Every structure is written in C-alpha cells, then in structure tokens.
Amino acid sequence: MSTLPGESQRPAAPRLLVVVGGAALLIALAVDALAVIGRHVGLPLLGSIELVQAAVLVSGSVALLVATLAGVHARVHLLVDRLPPGWQRLLLRTGHVLSALLFLAFTAASLWIASDLWQGHEQSELLRIPYRPLRIVAVLATAAVAIAFLRQLLSGKVQS
Image (cartoon, rainbow, N blue to C red; front, top):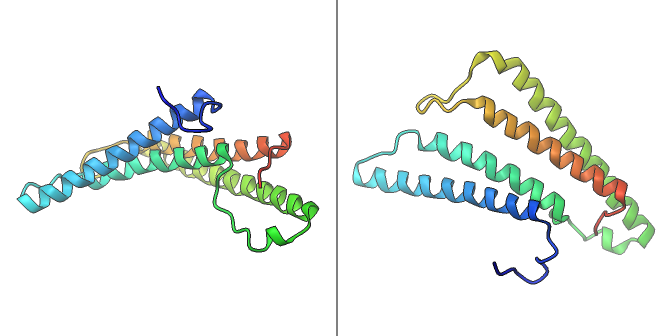
C-alpha cells in the first residue's frame, strides 16, 4: 500500500480510523445522492436522512479524534504568532486544557442524556435505527478526544 509523504510513521490505529471515517462519509454521500436521484425519477428513498445522520455522526466523531491525534485542529495564529515563545507555549497549553474540559463536558452531557433515555428504546421514525449505538459512539468519541488532548498536554506534545 503506497503512502503519502510523512505518512509512513503514522501508527495503524489512526489509519484505521481514517478508513472507518472515510467509509462512513462515503456511505452518507452515496445515500444522499441516491435519495436525490430517486426524488427526481419518482422513486424516493425513504429514511435516507436517518441513514445520512447516522453515517455523519460516525464520520464526524472519527474526524474529531483523528484531527486531535494528529494535532491539526484549525487555529488562528494572528495573535499567538506575535507573542514571545513562552507566552505561545502557555496559550497552546491553555487551549489544550480548555479543549479537554470542553470535550469532557460533552462526554458528561452525552452520558447524562444516554442514561436518561437508555430504557426508552429510542429509534428513528422510518427505519427504526436504534439510537443506543449512536449514543455510545458519541460518548466514546468525545471521551477519546478529551483523553487525547490530556495525553498531548501531559506528554509535552502540544504542537504549535
């Protein structure tokens, strides 16, 4: 399998995450494209929105985790680049702490909602897609992103 420049040192787990996230995104694209074509030819694809929503949840969750692991979240360098190196490091570390706290809050909120609705056996309206696995994906993804931020912070791998 050929790799892009700089990709050979990437561990297998993020590569697998990229494949899973990319597959979910391709599924969302294909389902939506078929739904649009179906509407135009008079054969609507019922439940397509539910399928797209589930696929986008997986794809978005994986994208957040991969971006965090790779340290490539979007940043505005307008102010930070003009500060002395010590202040730059302080602001980057503060950003990691705040990001970890934000994703821990997302995890707590997702867990709270999941626990409240766990016995409700929620499912989508048309296709009856169960929401439990999707809630588990959301909880695991937000927790993994928070842990990734904390690990980068504690290991000193905060990237500018």
